[in-house]
Length: 196
Length: 196
DNA sequence: GACGAAATAGAACGGTCGTACTATTTTCTC
DNA sequence: GAGAAAATAGTACGACCGTTCTATTTCGTC
Image 1 (cartoon, chains in turn green, yellow, blue, orange):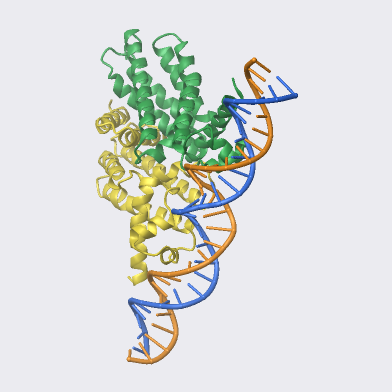
Image 2 (spheres, each protein chain N blue to C red):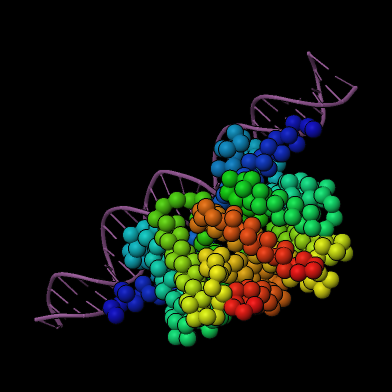
């Protein structure tokens, strides 16, 4: 790894952390430069524009997410164990960066914008939704979940459990958020399971 | 209503709309002045500071929320009908402003900050959570919901249904978001109901 | 160790930010 | 309708924004 690539990776690591706290709106080149010990123009030289930086932060976020959540789950047995691993990993993910889930942090300030950054985020989110539904359908195939389970509905409610957890733990700092989320998840699993 | 109060109300109405789209981070005095046809200093004179403006926007948001969601629900019969009205009203609320739910828009850029604006938002959110739990416990008392229902857990999952709806409809523009949310809600109602 | 290339710094740009201060206009009261 | 009070405009401030351009330093190769 060359010097430049090294620096860039360090910038992205810092940027990811910052984006989780302040979103993309609060992530300025000046403050990021200061935080990484570079000059503003020195940092800027690694990216053609702020938008390019955002796109690369997004890619780096997904890379981290796959490493921390998706990959470990894929090492688990197909079906229910993998679904559980996805949930556990996802919860951990939301606490990994100091500002919580970076995707949610940037989602809110991209909601009503348009452009490549939003497009990329949405594409990634769709992929994730698809993956949740696929994990559920594997659990159906393995006989863990009901034959007639609506796997897309399952994915939707799954994400609802996560979103409620994130909202209650992060904004409201509710100490019961995790136990509530786990209870909700168990309920979801139970009513999705075969031989209910 | 004096002229000044009139202008202030108009400013707040515009600010509310803008805050729903861009959050508090994206809501600048300059752009807000332009949008309301006032000079920047003319607008500023109505508020001692930007923070004061934010606090007042927050109060105005709650006022609107109570008017559009809480009050109509309170006119419904106690118990399940009221719970349903809260849900329906909440879904409508999320589509009322062009940027979606203003509370969620500003929640994400206050997550990790501290100060009076965040404190006020959190207080309001706790009130709302409490109200949901109370509505559920009334439904228990009326015999609509199970005696042993955990009403706080109900409130938590209720908000999860809303959050998933908001996320899927707003960020991902999923046309099925509403039907998914309604299905999730019906599931929640069903397993909370008496004589299941 | 020289030398071309890669990486970083520095300075400056027009713009917008929130805020303060001083005019000017509009409204209300008698 | 005069005059006080309220409401709005104008201007300026220092700070930071993203971006561009031109140095300067550091690195990798022969």
